[in-house]
Image (cartoon, rainbow, N blue to C red; front, side):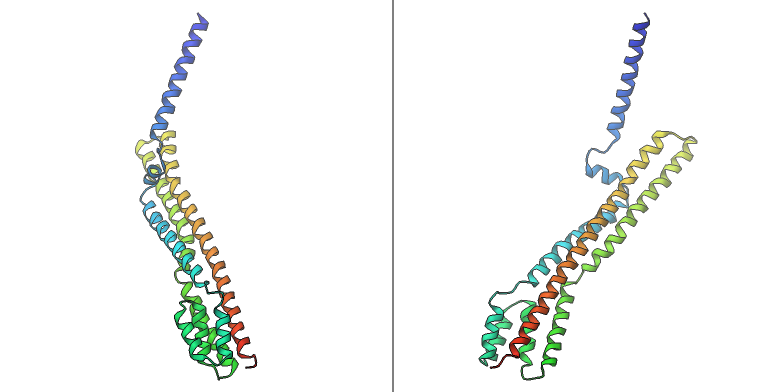
Length: 232
């Protein structure tokens, strides 16, 4: 008799646990989109910042990669033309080559005959402007890296405020009121932190690529100055 009662009690407990688990599972988000929707209104600016950071990162990466491209024989052809006094041909080659390095060298060619220091500083100024062009909008990634976690934290604060408001209305502390609202609102913090990490990493990766391109510009400038200093 006692064994029968224990078995029935165990069965009822298992049924209650299964029902509670099923109810909790039903209330949980089924996918990332549902979870993002339940994260609150703050998820809207986080989503906008995510799209913006993704666009900037991809667009600037392609621009930086293209800025570093130059024909392997470009400087060799410039050298041959300059040493053979074919200045017009060297200018034409530069104008037909759509690359920052070509624009830098074209500026130097247009100043041939002037002091080397003047030519070098003019090429360097063009290079600085070209680097400024490829840096365009990269700074927004740094700004997004700082803003995104703040929006996420703001969403969590809103969630906590709503949770305590519900507790005040119910006039009691129930675990389902606390856990049911808090775990969902933590989604905004997680999303903000994740976006911040992505934007931060993208910013520094692109800055490293820009430094590499700037070093390449400097190398080509020095190579051109060496050409001018060679005997005809």
